[in-house]
Length: 271
Image: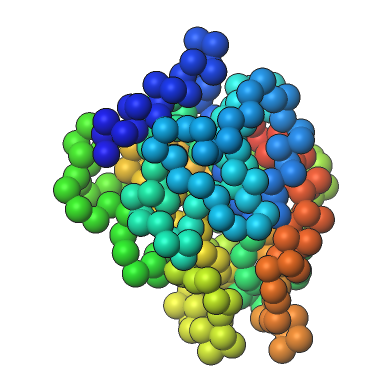
């Protein structure tokens, strides 16, 4: 695993022009077009990167973007990998390991999520303050590689209070409404039943999705500071609003992109 990480990073380092790239961004379902706002220096298909998985889900373009955003050097993943695609947890989180090897110290993640909190509206942006890991396998299961991180990493501040505060300040300046809440991560790929939505609400979840949690766990294992936002794509406020499909998820993600782009850009510019 360690040698694979180093091999992938060695290939990508030639694109970094010996500059520091300390910020990574993961663009989730329907949010890949945010990449158009990045001043791109290099676009590298995942298929060209040694040891990288390949995105198989519509809405995930499968490119690594190297460039500038918010006045900072960034590396952005235009599409992610999911456990439900058949990848192992090590494969799902492998790119996070590579980003850290390249010098990334701060990770921004975005996703599309179902609204469990009945006060949330379709299209809302939710700052992730914490998560509940409901995946059937843990990304740190197996022998620990001490060079990457400790055997038992803490998750108390998995989502950076510092960046959350900056995000709230930026949202006020931009006039962008933000919700805050707990993200529950499930395996998928089926959407949740009404009973499952109710269960997630009972255990403390405000939104639910099929990604992000493994990435954050692995990022924190390596000491990366993390910040996450969910686009709420359906709501449990009524039986009709709870229904959704992948096309609707992508469409709502697309409508949220201008707000997401403006917010991420403002936050990154202040780091």
